[in-house]
Image (cartoon, rainbow, N blue to C red; front, side):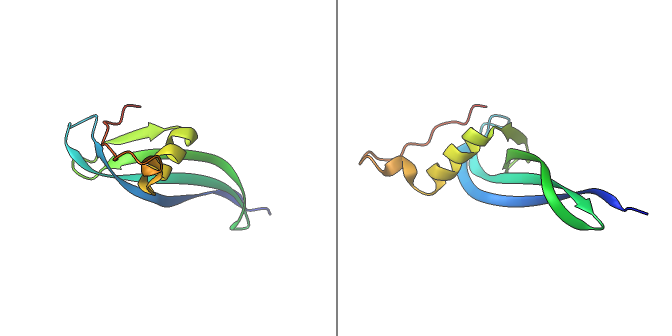
Length: 95
């Protein structure tokens, strides 16, 4: 008898201040990465899918983002936008 299945893992990558596309409020958004792994005898072996999303902490709306957008948002949260000597300006997030 072989026991197999999948298991999901949720990783919080960053917390960003963005203008929510749903409610229009400038609020904190969590950037999350959801990885689904194939398991054999309850041991996770390899990733089957990886998805990225932001969630507004004010209204709870969730927006799917691509891996490239997630990397840009994560770099922005680490201060990557201020590397050129310009002050950082908050821009609304548009998927």
